[in-house]
Length: 205
Ligand SMILES: Cc1cc2nc3c(=O)[nH]c(=O)nc-3n(C[C@H](O)[C@H](O)[C@H](O)COP(=O)(O)O)c2cc1C
Image (cartoon, rainbow, N blue to C red):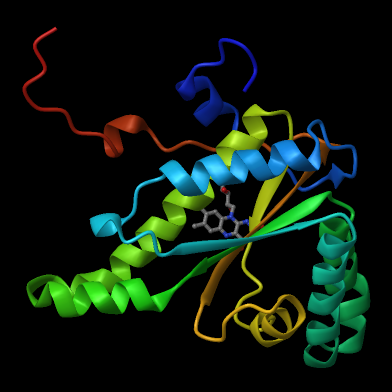
């Protein structure tokens, strides 16, 4: 993280950056270390540690976006594919890496059995757990000088990924975080008034 950058500054600075390039501000080893720290320390419901990540760098990242193109091409009308889908996917391919976030259903199933009272919540809490990892990774990478954006090409790419990177069939792909050197700025963002979203009771000073 940039020296003295507070957590709140990192939260504020995280944005969706779509123009990304291959100029990584950190080495592959450092990227893996950031991901390791996130996966080790981000919380999970009942400490289930149900999140799994697959980190794709360099050619492997490019391969992922080529596979996404292969899957989408036959599903999208040709002119739409050429004018919209293909350039968009090439934009992701132009980045440096992708982190694929999965949830392993086994620990979630174990929790359902161990705590029947909460059984109906564990699916939601697995989604929350995944989201926490996604947010932490996104914010950490931006704090380390990358730009990133979050994508959802699941479930259409799931089968290809499982075959290509030997991912267990039962893991559920939840999101893809695309990251790379920043080649553009974030778009303008509108904010709803905080008074409509935050309600404080009992503040004394
Ligand atoms: C749960 C979640 C799902 C999102 N899914 C996508 C997505 O599939 N594709 C995409 O381009 N952006 C996606 N985004 C990015 C949001 O559109 C973006 O975060 C939001 O507009 C605020 O902009 P900012 O990220 O620049 O702060 C997602 C964000 C969140 C939190």
